[in-house]
Amino acid sequence: MELTTRPSRDPCARGIKGTFYLTAVGTATVHAKQWAKVYRRGHEIGNHSFSHWNNKILATKTKRDVAADIGSMEAWLLHNIYGKVPVDHTYAYPHGNGMMGAQETIGSRQAGACEYESLLSTMVTGARTLGSGENDPKMVAKRRFNISGVPINGDDTTAFNIAKSAIDNGIAKGTWTVAVFHSLGDSGDGYSISRAAYTRIADYLVSRQADLYIAPVVTVKNHILAHTPPTDSVCAFQ
Image (cartoon, rainbow, N blue to C red; front, side, top):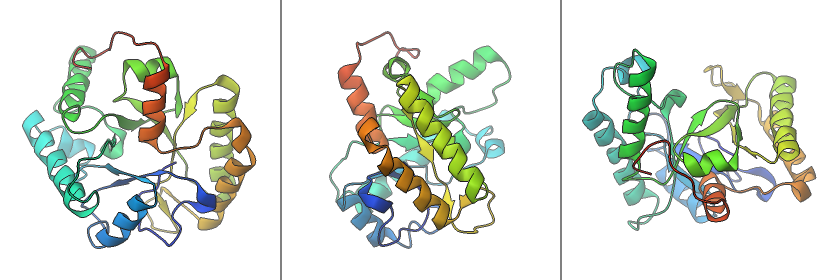
């Protein structure tokens, strides 16, 4: 479960623990003390970069630029959220883009992805992108910096059906579903859902709890790595 918005008194309904990816762009820095409380309640607070560059800007950046930007957010999290003690946590690629620089061919694109993952490996232990949201545990063990998430958005019915389908598929296939919630309410970004829809999804999760292992991204990732036979990584550094 994920949510990247201003924290409420109960950011994850029904006692569900989730992951919140923060960036310095927006309200996160204004509400640092509230986010620290969310972290102390057992939720994962992850890195979503400092500047949240879009794809066009990211294509102009070097590996050093990206590393400095992510490192700046790491420093902010360490000072404001974790209590100056390094914490095992994950990263969410801005806009789900796991590549950097001018990527024009399939070959260079793969190299770019591995370069991005290589710099991340010095700061975080895994990373979430966007896709189907169904993760084969064997692939997570092979590439923990390419965890797929499924965006949950649209009107109330659409958002619920997307989430329900992702949850049901995960149960049926034995895969790991990462549901991505961008914001609650009418933020005008095209990615938000209503609080009513979010609550309905949380209620459905609870109703299927006997069939599920519900936990923050970092917790599930660590569980998979601990219980999946090791395999050769797609990127040599892992």
